[in-house]
Image 1 (cartoon, one colour):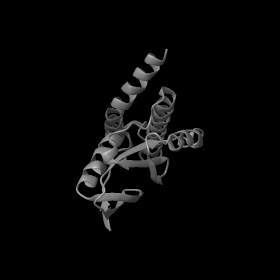
Image 2: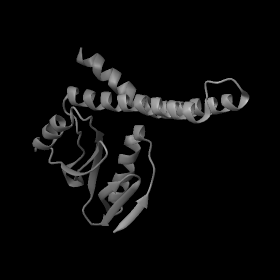
Image 3: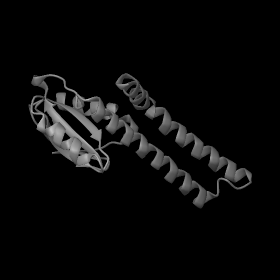
Image 4: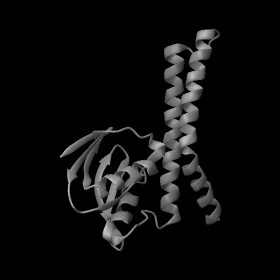
Length: 172
């Protein structure tokens, strides 16, 4: 058993998948995850990991369709908040969780709504803690920090947003 503390922005889920797949190739397979702590077991079996964010409303519907689709032979590994971690043996080849446009649109929409919620809560925190919308140099500095953090979050979300726009256009 091996514990690793690692932080990923929630909008950077593809990099987390890549890291989990690299760990699996090295013989360390994810067994569970809590917050920023990953628990690995040493195993010779290599897996391909995928993760997705499911909103409360669509959670059961999407999970049922993903798990019931036994053609891709995926396994639900663990859940951390609204993030679900799936895996499939590497020998079966790469796979996509979403074979349906509607499922992927639901996933990306839930992710974008979550991003808006995070940015709103962050703004409220900065306003109530530092009064960033008041006059004064100190408050302008805190406003700049808030804007910087918001931009970092938004920049990491651009690939997912582009994919959402592409899917919505191609669906029409």
